[in-house]
Length: 363
Ligand SMILES: *Cc1c(COP(=O)(O)O)cnc(C)c1O
Image (cartoon, rainbow, N blue to C red; front, top):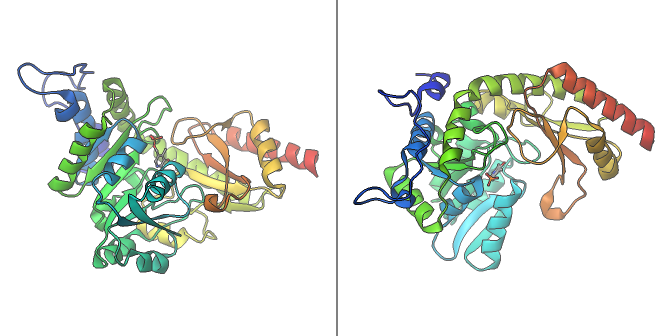
């Protein structure tokens, strides 16, 4: 079955109700506790994701909980290669563990394959984002997996921006793939959840064990909603990335925009890699305006259809200011956009009007 079909049927009971209900329990009769064994609602979600990714999935209370559980078993002093440009929460998690002496951290540009592979020598773990936050750079994941393994490092992939539809990292050799299910998988900006999938049964067991000890267990309602959201991921993503492509092209041609980052644009440095490795260019884009952080802020305040808010992957188009290179504390002049499901022309008219009014107001 193709991924689109798996999305619709994964984790469904074969008799009785078509959908697994919200099962609310902590203990089971005689033996068993949800914190360790899970619940039927989590398991339905896990079955659906596991089938898509090709491994054993474990559901978590958030993406950060999944990330923490992945890092938990690392031995003291393990060398970790992490992103210099990547999701902020995970970067802070890695930095704080390094500052406390728990790991030794080397931050690299994930789009610079040679630099990543040099850093992997003697490392225990490489943490990779195939589509990087917030610059939407493209990592060469197949070569990274191969080279990291040759150097003795395991590979963990945060594929939140790519979703299980654009990329299946376990097929490329990654050891663990994780997602913030809060984003595209849930898809409606109404829940917090995470999921991590191990390539081997030992990996999956270790993730489940860490989940229990960290108390990083999801809520039953969240698991139900995340699976409900997953069912429509293919159509949501198809529409959102088609709109992202149109917006990226028009932004790139707009006199009020200085730079656009979207791997679907043939001129984008990640275009060739994305075309080779991904089944689509995704719904995340970023752009810059000539007026710097002030103009970026003004633009966020002037949009009316696009919502000025953090997070991504929902039905609503969200935009927020970001630093281009967060580790250098550069000004927040980059605008990161998560494209949603509104009509493309409503989004464009909104952005075009806001860009025009900012250009007139500030220059
Ligand atoms: C949001 C996000 C996370 C963290 O997930 P939460 O569910 O918010 O805890 C991790 N990685 C990426 C790329 C994200 O976008």
